[in-house]
Length: 351
Image 1 (cartoon, helix red, strand yellow):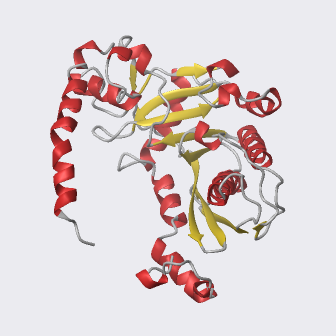
Image 2 (cartoon, rainbow, N blue to C red; image 1 turned 90 degrees about the vertical axis):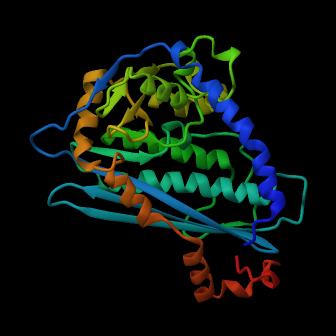
């Protein structure tokens, strides 16, 4: 794939602006307020069993339909009980004749998103016995992300399950599955990408006067660079989301009927953790109101499985569930899906 001079010039023109913005953030370092941080050390004694799950999804947009495929993998790390659990789903929708509704591509991708969340919760729950932690990739609230909930067209078909009438029905299934899983064991959600801020206003009260690029991770990294945070693995003082009005948008504005599906998961604990002396900070969300002692015990128990600074069970679940474009192309050829035109064949693209 060629890189043309015009693109190089366009990127070059932004370099000084990028550096200026980053410099502006650095200038805030001395203004950030300190926060309590708690060092983590590996605990001796019996290893705690850990279950982790992740999923992957791919799409194929054809001239007359949109297809999705999802696979989820759960792994159990417990001496003498190591296991892997796999589940998958696929679905497609032909382009409805009647227009004027949500684009079918958007609906299919939302169905796939909710389906993947449900599968992740399901495979993990099937592996849990007792006294085990469950790790999920992403924020707890990303599992309950809401947005628009259009009807699912009658043309939509699942491979192995009954088609729900609306996306709201699917969302409620995920919420109920989450509540059921929380009754069995402690769930921890580790997010690498931050889309909701919980600490910026607390640590930098005048943040509104500065750039909108600020987020929790940026502010905590400023504290780290200043030397105000430990060099060893640590987590910061947790905060708690205890009532619906504390929820991030759009969950705080759910209609009363849907809010009843959210209330059972409250309260939620939010903190940030690093599992290595120089490794990135991750956002941790957990069901229940966990104090610093609870968090120290839970996080210390996964340190032995986090030599790289990220939990090995989650890394393995991710790699085992990942569907690459090349693999999906090969599968499409094997199943004969390449006979269904996409309109991109003359560009040498099967997908």
